[in-house]
Image (spheres, rainbow, N blue to C red):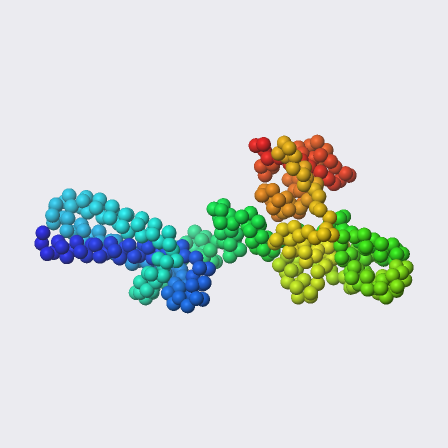
Length: 422
């Protein structure tokens, strides 16, 4: 073997090592957790800060790494071919092709990428100085190449300038929570709480409000003693007060204010001036997002709001507790009436009141019934069938069999639901 053979062979080995670094760096930089990096950077890790800066322009970084990787792979293959041609003649091309394919696939593709995928944060921190050097050398060329690629893709209607990710931050977090739950790192309650917190941005007040048909309210024209008696019998601390019709809410009565008023008149309910102790009602649109409504409750230090539609008619009411329950689940105290409406049968089916919210049913039974077009189970059946079904009618959709058990006028009041394969 001539010295030229050993020099060339050493160069090929060095180029394969460089290819190992290029492939591993690319995989680790694209798979690294930004949240984990931020935590490390906040803790004073300068390499994590460097990686954060590099992946801010991920297209430029990946382009530079790919350019460098292809250069060393092509050069390594060319050198190996030249050496083997001298040793074996024309057959050297075949030997070089087979040998370099095996070496590059194992040592420059599968091995570094598997390593980087198993420990993306640690790998990226180690190779961060190398990545910075590659971007310094090939960054300008990468920018030009990326510009050419964008122009070419634009001819086919693909515009990369619209954003690097198809998923929003909320969607990525939601997917992470689902994966952690599937892998056993999160129990169902933890998943539901985090999911409820993320859903506040997508849900509207109308999705969680107490509908006017289920809303307990008071007629301001009733005798004071009747109003006092009804408030004392109610499990709620706040109740809306109306005059003439339910769409004319004139005040909100708080049980504490009522108790103070009773004390001032020697506990004589007939002498209580109801309108004097009633607070001014707060009206909110039914399209307000839960996130905005929660912030409004906290800002105004309020707990209760009346929900109205676009015509100003009362649709229901929403409380701070309703929104918090979307995050932590049902909150019950010693004065709450146990929520009715869902009964598990011995045959595996579930009997459900039509007014039960779809979200509550999904959370309780770990189902995935859609709630985009309807809020309640009855509303889902009406939406899917495009009609108001009669009693005993049955329908199958979303993997469940729905049987209408009871209907009152135009309302579906009770259904039986079972899995299709049950």
